[in-house]
Image (cartoon, rainbow, N blue to C red; front, top):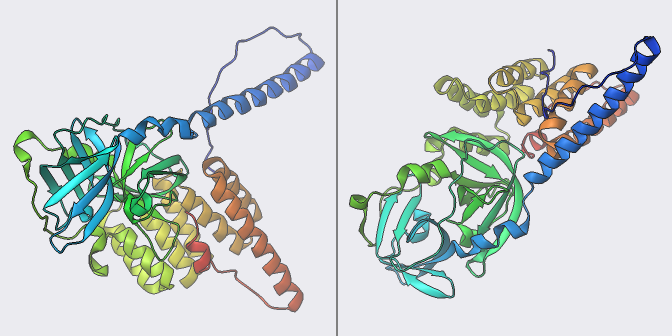
Length: 395
């Protein structure tokens, strides 16, 4: 397979005259390459710094993210977070206010009563009308425009006490119901549910919602597109009352969970045959989703070996040429096949897309090399399978 040619930075420079002749042309070519490299480095550095979150960016947003207190009928107090998305309108997770006939938000040094609500319990998005609340609405961004490894920031009341800011990166984007669930490493706890996930410019891209307890380092946010599509019209509000309704999609039985969640569970458990079956059903139901093929590749690496896995990862890259997870899997498959040049091409591409994942790949390749040398010295033969630990790492 030939590597897909990257184009991370584009720039142009003014032309200048050079002396003719072979030596002059050679010097000019060398100088042009030096200038090109310097400009690429400068432009890429500026682009990177422009999208790197700084804590200063999020100071004004602390007046838009609120603490949500829901007094339930059983006498317990549920505490979460919320984000101001329109004048006097706060969005939070429905699981935060479920069963609560009285809800207040805390912000700007005092408590404010919510009087009306609008709920989509399946998607775990609830809107609260707080008539006297004067917090500034945030700018709604786009989860569709995010990419893996992009910096993001989580802002919410972790632990339910004080507001906290966590910086991290997008790990994966999972298609669901005309949106993309954002998986990131921006750690948050239960009190931050309903808080905001922001990009480096401080625009809202998601709502902090749930975490994967098995993996430990993956945290999930609902896409801002769901908020924009569900902002209630005037005739959609209802008087605040104890909320019931269906459970959110992420709290369902295993066989009703979204495909990406079922795959995570099976991969963590090392149930490769079941994982392959889920990946095949997923790919059949959603043939344009590259993630299903990446999952298929991981299962095949364990069940049938690197050749079958490489084919699945290659097909995933046909659908999504910039998928870091697919390039990572392809590099590991080529490593198991002993195809050094192909490994280097995949590694170079991954380094452009996700530096952290590329560093993880370097570690895996070093361990594979050591294992291969050890097996060679002892006379054993190893096909270096793509282990469950490797598959469950950062993607």
